[in-house]
Image (cartoon, rainbow over all chains, first blue to last red):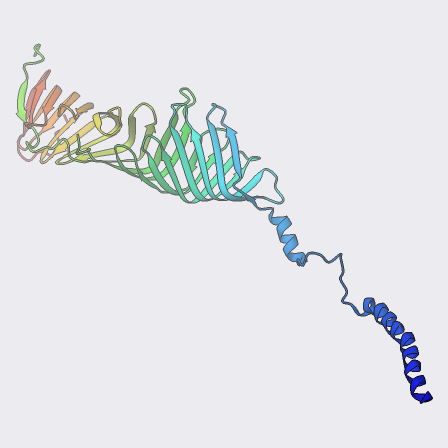
Length: 203
Length: 153
């Protein structure tokens, strides 16, 4: 019988020693085999994507406000624009909208697919479906319009079609000018003009 | 010397059906539109066509009414030629008043018709009934057959 009693107590006495040892071993190795968590690699972004973000420096809803020397205010807004990385003062815009307030209270609105504003050269180039509308009813379309920023002066690159209050108009080229003496805005069409006046029947 | 300017010769000119509310077709080299003063200045080989009438001039200024929806009048200078059907009228200047349907030509007016040509200082064409009043040193030049289309004295 003696052996039986002794075996049980010896086993229990052995376990009392080995079990904590095993627990200790387990605890100490847990940190060794756990997955590496590297706090420095926090954002999973490739360097290229990061570099694009910086060079693009995309602006949304940018707005350019300027006054022409004859006091006519001009506001150019775009859906998105980004500055030229190596030429400062030069901005490329998408879906551009330029609003020019004329002295007489009339407003001239010019919209285009793309626009380049270069303050250094005092130049804005609007291209792609350029659409010029004035509040007193003139509505012209052309492919490209180049204009100064400091005053209301510009010219179309080529053919202009559209209509004014009196009738429909086609011309080879259009100039927008501010008359030096009167300060009024004048539209000059050259290289062949064809205009058809149709009398308003409702008279 | 014909002193009484009003007593002139009334001739038939143009076509009774001249519709002064017909669309007006203008072609020219250049066109300047002034935003506020309701005018449009055509320069360089200007051709104005309305219904049966064609006007040629180097300089034509068009005056709109205030809403710019309609033309009130036109002024052509620098040597104007008006052709209507087979008749032609030349003068220094022409003023076309669309509202009253009257065209006044002034300065060395010369009207060439089939058989004769009439010169005068002034010609007032009433477009609605196709008559024209020639006033001021009215002279009728008869064609002696076989002459060229335009007698350049």
